[in-house]
Image (tube, rainbow over the protein chains, first blue to last red):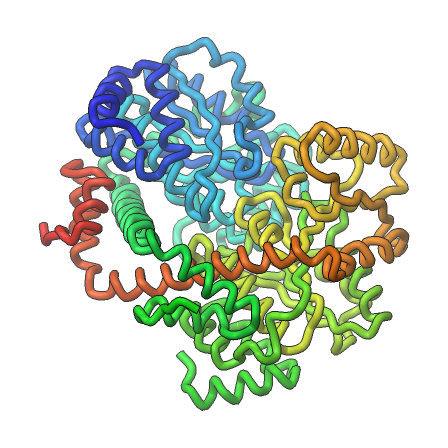
Length: 316
Length: 316
């Protein structure tokens, strides 16, 4: 827990864009849900909640990090300051999360206007999602816009994180069986913009056609399908334009709906967290006793939960 | 919601091991948290909560399904009835979850003593984990023992599911960079038993030695590292023995601790779910108003949550 004075100073330094304060604030966000809530209140809405939040997801090995680095370079040419959060799905057990392919961002490493951070989890279910949202708030308050969240989109939580952005970019590559996998997974339904990277591979055209055909079988509009060779920067400008176009006045409604849904989900999750924290404080022993009852075969988990929820929990 | 009479009949049919009832019960578990709680109470603890719950996880492509099928065959020779839950990490968006490699289970498909089911999610965070626990209860009540939960261990939720079992088996294969990845991910810390599958590959020995060395650098005992060629059944008997040995009287303490921890976590999650459901009923409009306030920049998510949690939420 941070003191009020420290918190205020930290918030001010973040708003100034101080890199060390930013790093410290993100560590709070990563490890301490209650501290994160305090910090976000201290940051307020003055400096933030305005950045375009872009989620980039897709299977491993399709070149997501390369694309994100290329996009960051494209935005830099427009004078933008870019925040990048790399969500490592394997991080809950690693302590210090750092994606191996972070290294591809090397060219941007010295640029103070591109802030890159890997994000580990707060441990609990939903913790990674809450941390990602809070971390985006911090980068937003520090003046980064867009804020890009890159996830390896194979796990439930990771796909949800990308999906919760204002704009979700799904990156695929020809081959690898991604085509069928992605369709099965409904990954396609998450995408506002589809990118087929590694478009110089010889099966790329066939892959793009298969994607188009898959969408034509569905109801609703087909999202743009763009081809890139991110490693050479080819096609990246078009992706950058398609992302930016989502905030054009004539297209903003979809983003507005996403933001409202995100606010609703975040408020609910934070209220639930606070209520649960308060409620379980002092009930540890009764919980232990109930758990013992369950493992001894005296009652079911549902029985025990019903007792608690109905205020009839008891010492066993 | 199922009627009490229907529920009782369904629970009885499940306990008899009726395959159609089992399928129906698992569909309830998959889709309806409240219905699942009612069903589990109707099933009671008489028939269940005794099976050995085995979690099998590991990166894609290491042969997990092949190993699980071979293990099932080994248990069949001992007269066991085996329940298998295949948790598909991409399922939240797919509707009907079915792992592509289910097909490798073909040889067991006609055997009524091997029950295989793919498991999708209830949608929310933690939903997949709760559904997996509940589904294992159902299989347990129907007399299956062991109950194996197979996950593709790359996502946070999926690793947690495997980790929550009585016994966690981590499957790796030589090459693929798994070695470094697994160590980075802390996947190794989750494992009670390590299996190096595809042990006929030429880099297998080097890989096993690297794993051993990784453990020797750590505190605590090294879990057994077993080599298999699951596709030929080689080494599978030893894995089966190592799993079964976890329930030997002299080794049971670790499993007991896991079961207590699981019961604690499940009770808590179910209580939180019930309390949140009750609490938010009728508060939808106020939540919408608060979310609008957040997107309009009038307050932060943390402000809004604090108002709710302190009972000071208001119509805006």
